[in-house]
Image (cartoon, rainbow, N blue to C red):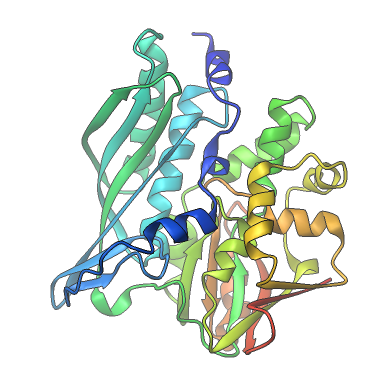
Length: 343
């Protein structure tokens, strides 16, 4: 099979293809509210999934995610897209139960390519401990793949994205730079080594990091995808506090710095910057680091808000995993900006 075929379908793949935050917020502004007391998490907080209570000790988490390919190998694309969709269940504190395929594919193309995409996705669902039950497909000139996922969680253990507490430390469980690296590699401007680092991160389930974090006093959690590190961190902030970031502690794929310096950046990153410009204050941060912090991630890591006394132990245990984690910030008294980034 000629796996290069995936490359011809799209110029914008992965979570870089997400619509801008500002457009989405405007679009959902007029959706009527659903006043159901059992709807514990809806779309009003931009959280990672919806949560509906079935009984006092059981709630279901529902989420879906899909996008065009950002890699050439269809099997690898399937694994990454599935890992990305499954991540929302972990970000909400839950366990994966079932998944349905979401498929767009050209009907005149080789069905073996689609078979490889589906095989990769199915393997990730199985690794997550879930069951793949079916799905839906349509004819589309641009392939897209993802999952609709259902998980379960105890209503008292839901991980909201905006329940940080003053003094909490913020941990990140995967290095940044995936958007710039994958886009630049496709254009022949990034190394194979960097590309493979990006791929390793994208296909790694966030299950393993959350299983560790759940043993500590964590107060909020979200995952980093198309809105970038700063975009998803911004969703963790309320009017009661700000988050201060030490950019020197943020881990990233090393070549991403060079790519940023050479302006090999993504349109998605610039959309993120535009939306966040009044919400983030930078102090002595190198321009390349700013770009890394805005860079859209596909199947990125978790952002975890953990009690200060637990932070060091949690970080140490997270760093027994294959992918490196880092302590990147602190929840502080309300400042002029939602996020304050120091260089």
